[in-house]
Image 1 (cartoon, rainbow, N blue to C red):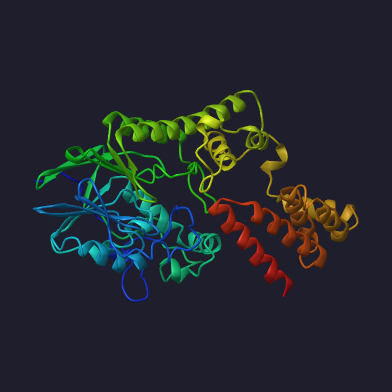
Image 2 (cartoon, rainbow, N blue to C red):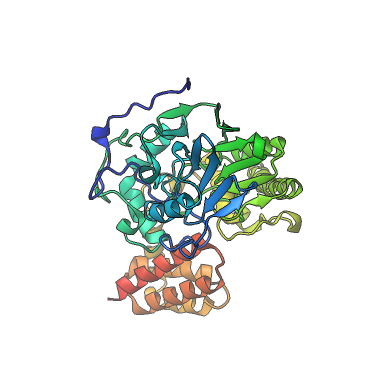
Length: 440
């Protein structure tokens, strides 16, 4: 008999979707893979499930991968992608096996992992999650309106395209509004046997507090969820998130390395194959995170401000893992403010006067938005980030100033041309949309 906590939440508080309750919660996307600005088309050209581990593990690729592990006693689904990917993923995986779905394991409760649960769940199917899922899903539901706005901007998509609930922006769902999802919850470890395979679910906090990894010892296979990307992770994601402690990632990856897997399957991207390759890749990844963490802490203890550290902390070449998804500078700030909070030591920060209010006064002293816009335009080619800051100041004083809007567009276009980061690109496109709206 399975020993688990029952997830007891009133379905009456669930967030409704247009046709039926939305069982995946209110933050429909969560953190997303490279190329994340095309949520509905990722993996659309796949015609056959990918096979691994001697044909026991199958992957449907998408905006989040769906995995099926086959046994003679039935199948286990690990992660279920977004709702709009579920039918395609199910068709790909059902072409391999039509056996009963005994269990669905969710590596965490971001919507790009939970969206397909209704498509896969059958009578008697258990849905397994880590116990922190309950509060994490409540948090996502609690801020549903905020995330509808942030995700729509970041991914340049309508709320409906991301699977958002009908309530949308502006409403308060209450503090404990997430509908039930997992019916089996565990704290540190939950292990079960199905057919000839053991499924060992292990709490591995990292990107989320409810992250779990799945270890199948007979296959030497480890499902790592979102604790690994082919890029530096986000200690902070631009759409908004609580602090993601860097040392959680480090400790969880250490546990993975100790298992000595021969294949590691992330929920975004392609597997890491081969025991030696797994050790090499994950060791580099862990050490990169630890390097950024320790450099940030060292700088804090020396009295350096967060912006100085954002500019100066760089990974050494041997630890550089790419920044196509997360960025070192954002992670530095995430670590800094995760430890110390928002106060920067300047008494001005303690008051409700926004920086933009001061910007607008300085612009007036400088003679108005136009001369500031001219300076911004002159900086676009050499320092577009500084130019962008200047346009923020100019537009705080004169929101419709044509020269400031033009300079802002030019600065964003320059930054966009240089960007190789999917999250950065999403927000730069949102900035261009803002300029276009202001110019109407």
